[in-house]
Length: 253
Image 1 (cartoon, rainbow, N blue to C red):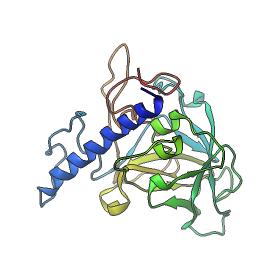
Image 2: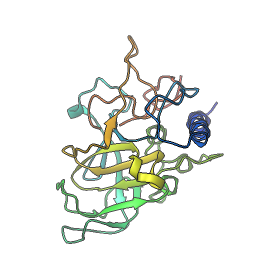
Image 3: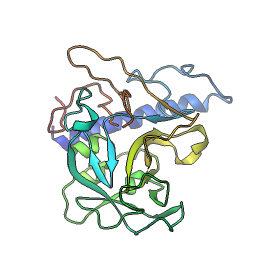
Image 4: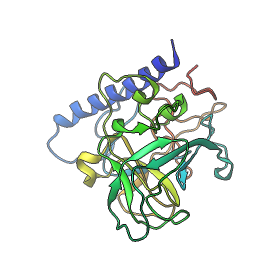
């Protein structure tokens, strides 16, 4: 099985989980406490619910994507390597550009346009996509499996296809230091989803509608399962929903 096929299988599991959750919600006409709906096939509950979730293993520094290449949750944040990939923007912004969306994010290996002042964690303009799967990449650039497995790049950018694409918005401020939120708040409504990736906020952001998903760490593997399973630090990555471990090359084994 090729890496692309393995990635597609993993993401199709997430899609199946989302369908299951929707079928459960369709049967219920009122708000429910966490855990009331039974776990899905991957033993996960409440994937998209009342709160957005801080997740570990990813941060954006002036558009640079920093993350452990092997999903190593024990690696100190100060040691997270530069992936070599960037979030670029289709429009340039500065401190006078307001606080709304000014264009689209673009996956690249260089930043040519910043939505705000470099090194500034303030909340100026941002870029966004209503559909994360619509993310584009710099022409001619090869998108690695590691970015697909991390839920940063859609499978389509690695020459794959979805039977049912995962849903969710993509927000990013490619200036200052930003940490990821996944899923979406109860008030996010249509912008929430399994694929939602919000890279708009600095470390200092705090709100009553932000939470995290704790993980039970098992020895000797010390790996959690599910999008945003590890939450010791602000910052991301989804482990494979099938529970398999990930090699440094980004493939299952």
